[in-house]
Image 1 (cartoon, rainbow, N blue to C red):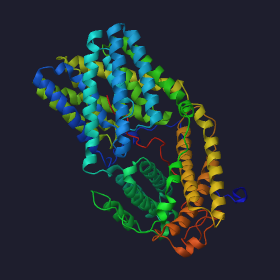
Image 2 (cartoon, rainbow, N blue to C red; image 1 turned 135 degrees about the vertical axis):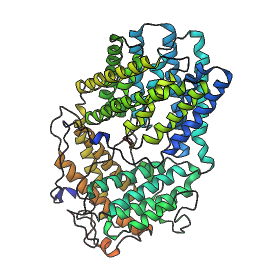
Image 3 (cartoon, rainbow, N blue to C red; image 1 turned 90 degrees about the vertical axis):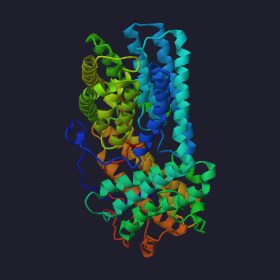
Length: 605
């Protein structure tokens, strides 16, 4: 059916330029994350009690171990609490496990060459595990900093159990801090995800589907809607009623994406605002049950289960980059006589993103942030040296500042993280300010140069190979969806499943194409095929959403006469003012990142 569909000419958008490494845009300050205050306050609440208790006991030298566990409070703030409990438990286990391996290695040998090798391997494992599990910000960098720094702390085997126990206890406290908001706002994460989808859709609707920046706005809106679905699918069984009410709102967002000319952006934003706080979800008392029928268990098939090997395979180049780059950075630091090679190792580990272009951006941000950060440390050091309490208070301020600024740009977060990392080294005792600054500057430059060099050497040639399978998947799922649309008796649950599958495939295609476009040494990507597949896929999604919007009784934004004229091959019809070439499915934009999304991760020491 779809093979006979005429393909419209793709919109003229600039092709990616993977060999151009920008500078100015990399440092541009953006808007903060809409939940920046949650990790900021959480990390302060997790770090303060153990650290202040150790100050009272006169054992601030042990604070580095408790802080390792406390930093777990930075993770999983975008997940529903049912899923957050498991994710945080996994982070605590990973943090404690990495710390234990590092402390045992430090107690068995003082050979720096061996310790750097252990740190590099740990960094590669932590990177892969964080990417496979999609744990999100701050990613592997916190884990790598803690484990690599612990490798160079003088240790005896008998001390290891006690130090690991301190980290575990602090980790349990961090888990409690991360879960505490559930007592006040049990559905906060999924409400926020739904609100984000509504706001992103409103931004696209304001373009009219054809205005300036509409392709980018549409891609962002589809990614936000997909993220909302994934968040809703992670909710626990006790949240069924709230989940269904939120699902109806996400359906309304999808209807607006299908027919932007018929939608009211003010209403979408009003619905998003209504999701703040703990009030009733708009439409929660809607007696109509069609949406529930559409959004039943079939929605859980939105993203097919993939084998562990299929998820690990694409990460092999990233793992090799991390191990090689971290190891070489550590050895280069040793060769220069720097006493803390773990800073160079951690710097290299923080650079590696989905492709070379993003890695370059992170390198520039890291260097600029660290260099400014050492100047901040020089100014704050006299205050921190007043005593243990002053030192801990300074660390709390920088912990908060890092999380408050990270959403605006990575380098701003690094301005706070760098003095924090330098102050932590003074927990066991006073360190010379001049030597700390010198070591940090040298290790930053060494780690950035060597780490980025390793990324250039270890190319991800298979990134381009994954575009073709992604195109095939989109084509097959679109054909399946088109067949269901052509059947007036199609089962509503089957329609919903097909729509979820197609939406997930389109998001994955955009993420795959963006990742491949940012790599070096790749053959020319099939950009035209990607654009055409996205156009056709979005038109089919639009037709499905409009049909389901009527079935769900939630299509207040939908023009019924336009829906009547919609077909899977020609798009949403003319009633909405959209055509197959210019409608909501046309073109492509700078898409969503398959990780979830946050390009401001990894901003830690």
